[in-house]
Length: 417
Ligand SMILES: C[S@@+](CC[C@H](N)C(=O)[O-])C[C@H]1O[C@@H](n2cnc3c(N)ncnc32)[C@H](O)[C@@H]1O
Ligand code: SF4
Image (tube, rainbow, N blue to C red; front, side):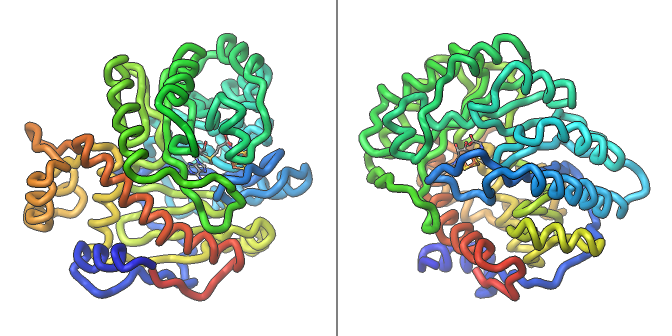
């Protein structure tokens, strides 16, 4: 844990208390009155494992994948049973791994979800480029999927090689995208790779928008301690210049920056599984964020299935927030949308944002990180860069540590961050 993240946490939470995660957990989640609730489902199977990828996944095997989906459906019913009436939720996202590997079971999972929840803003799924065929897209669309996000990373072999991903032929993917329509077609890219110039990133952006995408996500490369990535990090100055040039280019082309890392053609519905005030997560490694707690499910598929067989939730670690910790968590994720809305903050916490963090907002304005608009705060380009800088720190100090532990132990006793 770096001194910087610890000091910032103490300052912003006004306490020396760390985030304490323990293995005690609730077998019934209270979300009946929770507003702006999103749903996330994790499918931890891939056909090949990419060197750079930190997510919870194993190589696909028919039998394990089927047992996993059976357990997943049971988890949905265990969580859903806490509520007699169907609960309205914003969205449902399938992530992974490569969820399209179980395309023929996506309908069963959505049916289980629909017994307990009413989805108001559509259903999204992450796809590997090799999964994008006419047949698969049709199956997914018939199952109820309305948005897709394809993990391209780069259209250029040179960068795929650096990332440790096999060469990909995009011809059939482009054809399939023409034949089967979705309201949002997003493509993911990774930037700040060695020798990656703006011209090369621009080539990827143009290729995406010319071939079916109406939304893109461009993430800076993060070098997790437990991945096998051989890529060398780009230095901060170069990275900032690249990020600013990408942002300006997208703005010139009329693409709207709808979060720190995403740009969209106008009137496109967002693809975003992250920017939710609250969410319920199902499956291995999935996280749940409610008003008073954050919890993370076990990373072990075997342990996950065993817990569910005993009618117990597969929660591995839970943190019970202090009010200030929850405020910081809320602000961190809201800032990801580039906008902080004091009215929404007041609705969530019942107190005025300016009374809680007036000094910090003032500082952020003085340093040119935030601008006050009519009734909200908007992040500037400089703000977005520093947010990214801090997010990188946060990811390597908190998430890297948590995931490293969870990969080793199915149910660790505790973790202090
Ligand atoms: C769950 S992942 C992958 C989805 C899909 N299975 C695929 O491979 O295309 C979602 C996205 O996170 C981004 N990502 C994964 N590892 C990353 C890393 N080390 N640094 C930055 N972004 C990363 C990638 O852009 C990826 O598409
Ligand atoms: S990047 Fe996608 S396909 Fe590659 S290992 Fe990660 S989840 Fe699997």
